[in-house]
Image 1 (cartoon, rainbow, N blue to C red):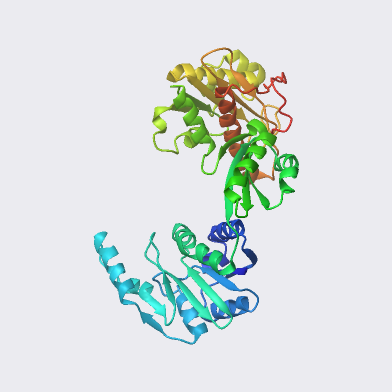
Image 2: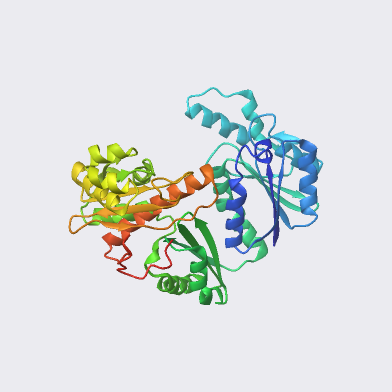
Length: 431
């Protein structure tokens, strides 16, 4: 089955809003063995939408549109589909009743314009939206089928998963597909792909690599009647080939893994941050219940704050500056002691755009001080992926990942390489 995607909205066409719906739809459809052959963005103009729909159906079996189903007068997708089908719009009584009840439950007054979301092209099938107000639509045109979905991401995803994907699978007779996404930290995408070459060659197995700063997600898709059983074996082999770089699966983010490991040990962590400016602490407080394992943090951005708030020796700062492995170690131990935590995480470095203390942009030291032994400091050499704000943001994000991954490895008793180059394990693949 060949699918084309059509996203509608001036805000997408002009770049005011990032078109994340297309990325999600492309991944989701590929997971189910559906081929996406083209993606087009058009503005809020009736005849342009009609032409785009007809053009797409001249090439594909079906078209999925997102956007243009809301209540305002520039939401024109339903009007365009009615025009393409040569039919009128009619107000659906059940949709109108649902809208009125939804607004009444929220204690609001229904605006007449909102009733536009109850207008449906004659002959169209309504696709229920359990996550919001605007329903989806299924319209049969001479060239094929159009599935029109809301532009609000969580509403679009709900209708897609609950209605559209099962229907497409049934129409196309697609084989069963089992999927799992494994998450890695600190390993380059090219290294991941090289190590997984034998898995790529397996029949009925597809791998997709989804890189983020200092992380790579590997989406494993296995097709066939025995897909679920085979997936377990494929996942085990991927984990074996990638080793401890794999930190979680599916929605198990790095911060959640760290919190779980800390909770299992009845331990807490505190953060001392320079170049990251509080981003590590923000990551560790993103999930509910994080107060059980996160004690707090100190944003010691200025050098003098490192000395006064964290107890970093003044002579150390005077001799080496703020960007040094011994400073990271002292910061980690200082915040651990100051906040009474079991572990302290620290990060100091140069995010740019200019060098600091003779250190080039991308020089970073992250340290972890635990309840026993001296702090462990890692000095990942981070790439400079551009210039200015772009480079700065990526370096800061990569530092967050490296800091949390260092703590994860120490909590699990895994070997690491310290900033002095004394390798406790071979980490040549780690960024």
